[in-house]
Length: 282
Image (cartoon, rainbow, N blue to C red):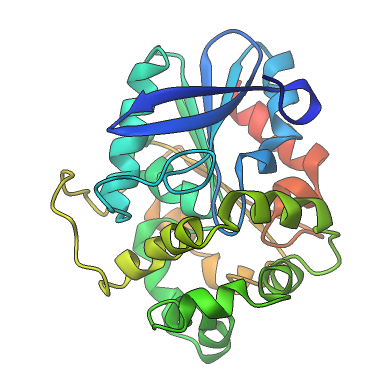
């Protein structure tokens, strides 16, 4: 079965979940993890570049995002995402040359599993030690309104309201035409059960939903070098709040702000972001 731009859509069973994923190329694994409100199609510019460089690019639809199934354990805490990545790494070959790339929610397990991969890249979410800054500034609290909204019983109806998802993309990446991406999102979390799953990540994040206890706890540290990229015009997490990111990353890490890009920097400035990532992987 073919997906966007000729990428194959396949399925694999890992960590008790049937994952659907896009894949392109042959060679060492390059595992690409998307965030919210997004899908595996977000990597449509990077995956061909990875394949051309000799990687087997794999972009799973994260747990709860169709066509991946909604997990039977109902777990959406970071520990569950980390367990997913570890299992996917093993089921997809587990080669020593594998690399991991995560954007937004995909960054959380990428940080936590960086030591399992030859190289790790994160986009748009700073390392764990600096996340406290996100809730320590008034303007940022306003940007993060949706996180608190998602803790309430109004979450699903609000997120399903006309214009809500479009508004997040517009605010987070000003000037970017997200029409195609929003269509992908509607196809993935348009069903109420899938939308609740996506919101479940945020409920687990602030403890509204207690940890399931089904997955090993995750240390709040990064133990291997990471390339961290952040859009200078990010409307989700202000670039001003991540300037100390390197202080929270191991030696050998690198931090770059991408000018003229917002939260979805890999879609807004694909040539530059691809170059930065491929240079780091090399």
